[in-house]
Length: 94
Image (cartoon, one colour):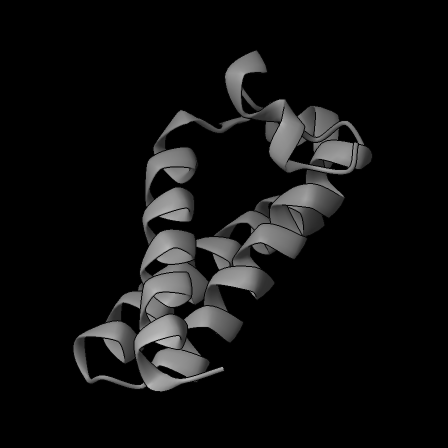
């Protein structure tokens, strides 16, 4: 994959996760436990990292961080700890 393609893919994934994160509804801590809350915070941290890498022109790292963010969200969704609007459900394996 060339640099321009990698940049496009990284920008798309960072944008997608930036759009989804504010829409995620985490269930109450007493229902999901502290661990789920921590994983959600980690997902948000990886999104911030992906934005930083994108800004620095580190497109592979930006893409990787966005995918890790997605993976955490996907796991939380599969375990029933978060809710995501129906319009975005097709982006997840759950």
